[in-house]
Image 1 (cartoon, rainbow, N blue to C red):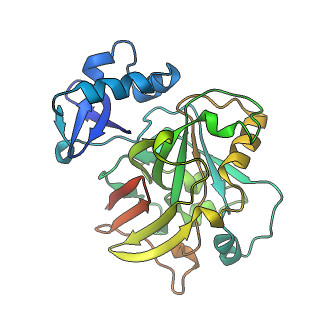
Image 2: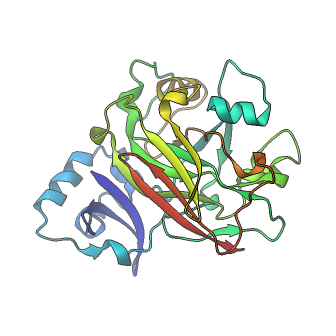
Length: 283
């Protein structure tokens, strides 16, 4: 099942993606579950699937929907740095025993087919194709063995990075949190659609040119390890997002560097999930 969040004339909405349309859950169960995060917290994925299967036709055309980030209001967005060996090597960073983590804020995200903004403070806007894991069940100190039970699903993510601001200090927060610089979408594919630990392919394309290509087998810290480590210091809640890291090939490490610029189109494709598409616009 695929679940998307989007704007409606009455505000934010969410629904089940069916072929070229969406079965709107907002008007059907929106009073009880006002958004996708609430649906996950209520353990109502099975109810959503039942409603979608019973629907005679889609309520909205997929091509007409203004997408929001998959989870517009996550409690936490925890991002993992240097989690593919090729990327670690191109940055010249030392190997670390534990994951390198940083936080993004919801304001830094945009949905599928929405414009990523290049801020006027910099022209060093870089792409980072990643796989996002959406949490569906709360937990603290989750064992690796039990970690998959806490996963609701997966989405594509572009951890857009303002590189010069990222390098102002040893902490990456500023360069990772400019408004509307990260893409999150197009939808969430539920865990039931992808086998636990199944190898997925991740690819980033800039104006049609392949810039990054890798599989999850190249991750240094796999998803169970990330859930275990992060939940050791914070409670993971439904709707929280773990962004699992980018492979080699980022623009900053090319010679000469390749930066995203207004008018560009960037695509992040994850096998069995879909393709996240964003244009670049001056902010």
